[in-house]
Image (cartoon, rainbow, N blue to C red):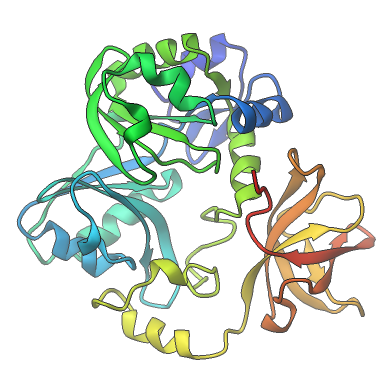
Length: 356
């Protein structure tokens, strides 16, 4: 099992450590609800250094990225980032990722930890353009500083005006005494903040200064409840090699202004009635929906599966995502979640669950 550059720091802070995507990661420090609340109302910091980073450079870097990603990366100017996915040949999703345009012909792809090798092999196999590829995953660390007070609490750590960095934009500058750090106004919590990319030997100094400035350490358990309250897909749960972007509600990152892997078939799928759709639901009664639970209709007939579920710390009710037949996907539709012997009634709702 791999460690991040901060593993010893987490252990010293009393974090409960668990294996995650091949890494020894902190799942919680003080408790999920306390940490969740800190991000929603103040400021928290996550060590997400297990994520993968690929640098793609050269005259034809954009050509390669355009051919393997679903979104239109030609829209990116230097200093902008874009959410996208890697379609496979069968209509499913190899991974979801963020594409950063760092320089004119230099792009950074940030991929999920569990998919680093798979993604690298896939993109490499499609690199008929002569683009230069470097896997920086083992060299770089990533901190997510999230929450409504992130700008205010972190401003003293940088000479740049952090409030000027718009959502899905980034700068390369000084932070916490380290030069040439990527400060990106991205994150997976829905409460604002930044993601900081730095080298492994720099991250301890940044972590220490960030926590001294008032960011509470947050574990992966709260990261999951935070992202689920926003309805953000988690790879391996809500999207995978068998789910199409349209089934998953990711048509907005699937642009047919260019050719990419399986684009012709996906364009045809867009015109047809889907066999299933990813829905969001809230339980009408007490209960906690969990991944893998059956979704049934009023007669107890199986109509889908829960892909992500939890007790929402903000809403104080059971929430979840799952795939169902399209006839059950309209907002307000009544479904049931099979929790052990009980079919607990639930309502299909519009995302996000947490409105802020």
